[in-house]
Length: 150
Ligand SMILES: CC(C)(COP(=O)(O)OP(=O)(O)OC[C@H]1O[C@@H](n2cnc3c(N)ncnc32)[C@H](O)[C@@H]1OP(=O)(O)O)[C@@H](O)C(=O)NCCC(=O)NCCS
Image (cartoon, rainbow, N blue to C red; front, side, top):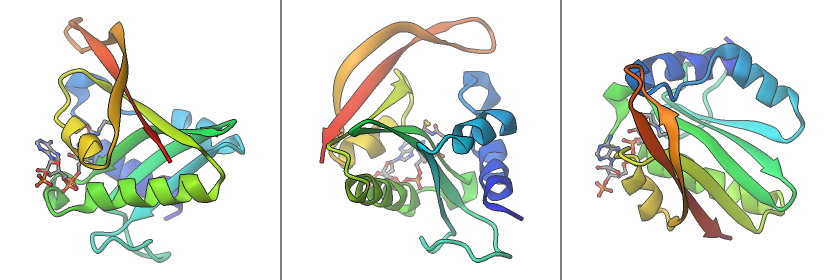
């Protein structure tokens, strides 16, 4: 199992198709093919999984000039609520700082409870895009942009 396989196993289990937030394998692969894209994987103990172990959570991100965008974060449903999401964000912030970024940002659908995890990590809302997401049944939902200075 390579890192892409491990991330996709979490992706497929973590995202409710209703919201249409999950990325396809091809989309993730393309973003990682660019030098700016990177993946953080954690097992349930919050460590990078060894070659033979699956991941329990991942962050997909990309660096654009002096900013890093958190594209997606996912934790297996049965591993949630134990701080793994927060650990992944902490690692994301540290890695972004090491890469020389001065700011990080992300976009999230307006009604996603994940917002709480972002706020706990120090992200603040900095913008809103109207009707950015469209659910399976066609409902439109705003995107909220969160940012944090490093
Ligand atoms: C968002 C997500 C990664 C959080 O993972 P996690 O491992 O449960 O996060 P943590 O355990 O660190 O939770 C941090 C805090 O947020 C809260 N929280 C996390 N996810 C929540 C949810 N879905 N609903 C309500 N509260 C949630 C936790 O209660 C916790 O609060 P506390 O510190 O006050 O107890 C996980 O819920 C997930 O994979 N969701 C589906 C994918 C998704 O929507 N990703 C975000 C958009 S890209």
